[in-house]
Structure formats: C-alpha cells, structure tokens
Length: 231
Length: 118
Image (cartoon, rainbow over all chains, first blue to last red; front, side, top):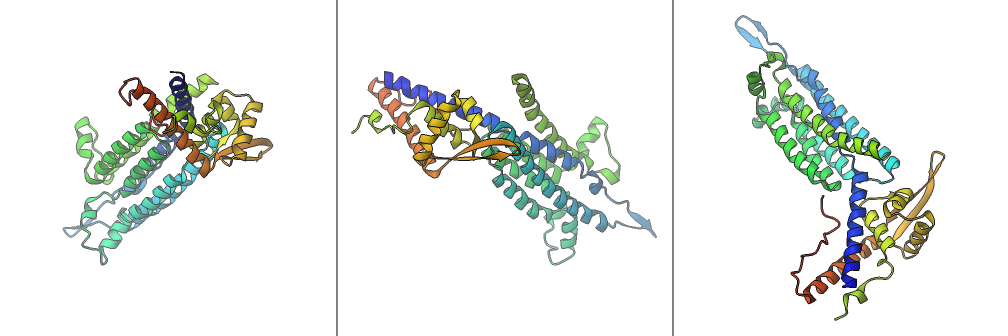
C-alpha cells in the first residue's frame, strides 16, 4: 500500500539520518586514549619504597609516595576531564554536531573524588585514624580511581548510544577490578616479566592503562581512516 | 477510530522536516551545513523548512560567529522533541495497522525506534 510504503520510506530516511548524526558526533576514542596515557603516567607514584632494615626489623615508610599518588589522581583526573570537554567542543565545531558530554564529566569527576579517598594516601592516612575497621581497603592496590574511569565510560556509552563502548566499559570495569584486587605480576611472571619488589604494582597499572589506550586506538583509528578517505 | 493518516501532523509529516527533527533529536545542536549535507538539501530549501519549524516553536536557530566565520546552529525545543516522538509513533501505528489489515504479523516491519543503540 502507498501509505505503508511512504511510512516505511520516512522511517528509513529517519534512521539513516540518525545513524549519520551519531557517527559524526562520536568521539569517545579520545577520552579512552587520554585516560590510558594518564593511567600509565601514574607509574612513578606506584613505586613501593624499599624497606629500611636494621636490628632484625624492617619498616616501610610510604607516607610521601602515597600522598603524591593521591595528588596525582586529583590533578590528572581534573586535567583529563577538562581536556575531554575541550576535545568535544573542538570536535563539535569541526564536524558541526555537538555531543552531550557534561553528564559524563560530572559522573567522572564525582566518582573520582570518591575513589581518590581510596588511593594509598588517603587509605593509609585514614587507616591510622578512626576508620581502621575499613580493612578491606587495605587489600586494594590504591587504584580505585580506575573504577571511577570505568563507571564513567558506561555513562559515556549511554550518551553516545554506543553498544561497542558499553561492552568495552564492562570489559574495562573487569580489568579495573583485577588491577585492584589481584597481583597481575603472578601472570606476567609466567611470560618472563617479573618486576622488582619496588615495582610490583606496575603490571596492574599498565594492564589498565594499556587496555584503555589500545581500546581508544582501536575505536579511533578506523574512524580516522574513514574520514581521511572521505575527504 | 480515525485512519492513521488523518492523525499525521502536516507540520512534521514532511520528509525534510522529519529529517531535521530526527537529526536534532540526537544531539544538543547541529550546524546548518551538517543538516544540509545529511539531508541532501539546498541551503535555500533548508532555510525555508527551518523557518517553518522555528515559527511553529519546534526548533531554535542561533546565528553567530566563530572567529571570522559565520555559523548557524540549530537546536530542537521541548515541543519539537515531543512532536517528533508523536510523529514516529504515528508512522509506526500506520504500518502496524496496514500490516494487520493485510494479515501480516505485527512487528514484521523494518521500522526500528530511532533511539536504539547501534
């Protein structure tokens, strides 16, 4: 029937326009790459100090290092989200389609503020105080900000209406939990990489950082090549 | 009961205008050039459709400059969003009724909600 054919045609046209708009608006590869770099750049703050031994007793003083890690996440997270806003603005001006990004930024910053409380600095600081019963935090590797990044990606996936990003966010959440709860060096040792005691958290941090970085490049490069070809 | 074609809104039930609202429904604001390219319209044609939609209170057109470059951004209003949703629902209903009258299984069409994830 003519009316049905016309309705199908209109809906088909609508879907095509929506698909092109979403494709043009999409920019989530950028925060993935950016936060991948920021996670890997946190490496110096996850060095475990060498124990000072004497008279049969070894002590570890972590205060300086761990507070620096906390400060790093606050500064790096803030800068990371600010750069992400800047990128989305630039992207909107370039392609002519604005993306909704503020809910992602608000979620990311909010969660970061909460999870920074669980980095080694605040963790150790609080555990010496009245919060000593929060023993489970001791089992974490001070990488709770990774969970903030992971949960923020779910919001971004919803905003960008991207199922692939939603799947990646779930995968990265799992990686973040592994980085926080498991000694990844147990696995890297099997492939011949056994970092020194000082750097035993490196495999955990790099696993998360490289996951974000490679994920971002995996999403971004095909888009970039497609745009280059269409220019 | 009205025939579904009688329910279609003449303001929105028009290929270009429905396309404009579909694009704007997806994003906070869109550049005039992007709309022209995606909908394959001439500048004059798009301007006329935007004027009609703006007068009906369904879109807002913001003209300004970015550096030295003149730029026109278009965004959908709350009314525009509502009208777009109603129109899509009407089109689906039309297809459903026609399919039902022909003895087809409902839902056996290629009509998907525009807001689905891809």
